[in-house]
Amino acid sequence: MHNAAFRALGLDAVYVAMRVSADALTQVLAMQAATGGAGNVTVPHKEAVERSVARKTDVCVRVGACNTFWTEDGVLVGDNTDVEGVGAALGKLGATSFTRWLVVGTGGSARAVAVAAADRGATLVVRSRDGARARAFATWATGIGGNATAADGPVEIDVAINATPLGLTGHDPLPIDVNHLPGVQCALDLVYAPGETRWVHTLRERGLVAADGREMLVQQGAAAFERFFPGMDAPIEVMRAAVVRALRR
Image (cartoon, rainbow, N blue to C red; front, side, top):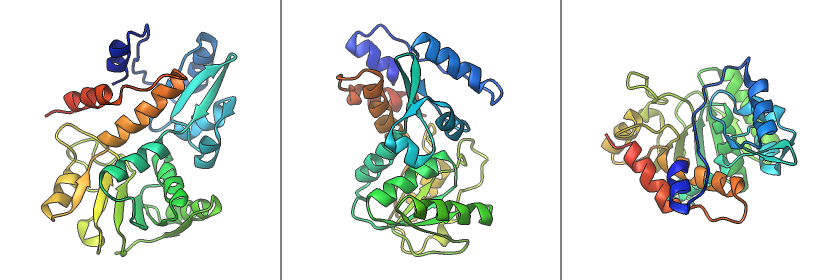
């Protein structure tokens, strides 16, 4: 989607994927700063990069995870556009008025969900395969101004959000059993895949409104683009069309 945006706007830039090991992360970030680079961060490095950038936005500090960085005056600046992306994706689902959220997961994406929930005054229920992690996450989320609790059984909620990597491969188990979501109105799977994820299909079979993470991908990407190129509006429809083409079955 970024390369499509560059072509549409005639920008002399290229966006490439880099697989980086944890051991090489410090060197890669130093290289980016030295060459004036910018880019995005995905699992599992978001929290490590937040600790590594020289400067960061207030949102990045609150989330404790960085998914977007760029260079200013020879140093890396970190931000988190996932928060913006979560809010926009839920808006597309018509979920802006819902106030009871469930997040499955406790990683960097879940942190963005927690900040988005806190900013909207929503209560947040946290689920994880590790109950201690869920409780620690709920404590952290409450500490940044949210209203969060941990749960390991069925809970009454309006919105369910999968912030785990489950669904990246077709044989992954579902992040949460639909029977454990009484009262749920809609669901957002932050994972995106060609043809959408099995969890999204399962939820729709139950008559629920559900979407995978492609809209969040587009929205956080457009926000990141505007960090990379200050003063320029991201061509969001071009970026969305590129994502739709890439994820077409």
